[in-house]
Length: 138
Image (cartoon, rainbow, N blue to C red; front, side, top):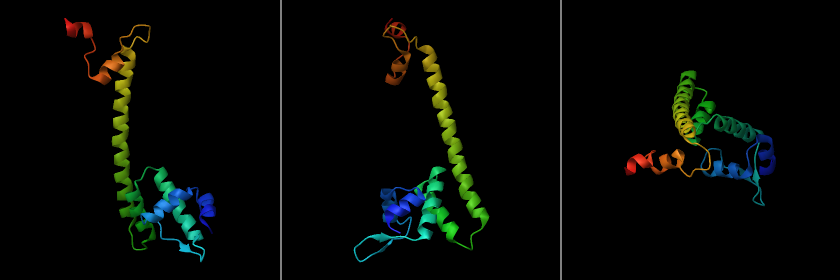
């Protein structure tokens, strides 16, 4: 199969396939005499695996580790579980950060009158200015 067909079947854009190949995430494709890349069904399956893992937020480095485990018949499920639990912990930290950002925005939005006045606590906060400029000046 040529790269366009593999991209269509795997759901991975051709540019991304070339990138994965360049960083060693997938093996180098065989080349025809004319220089076209030729892939097999295993490559499609590997790209689908990568796409699913990336969709779950795994980094390229983590995906490389998962691929290594996937191809290692001597692996233990504990190794895979450890990697997944580590990734889940990263997601939990990110969720906590996002919740904090949301709470800050909720507070700032509640403080903003949203009317014709130029005073805006949202912009003041982003600029690091005191919220009550009259009190700060006085």
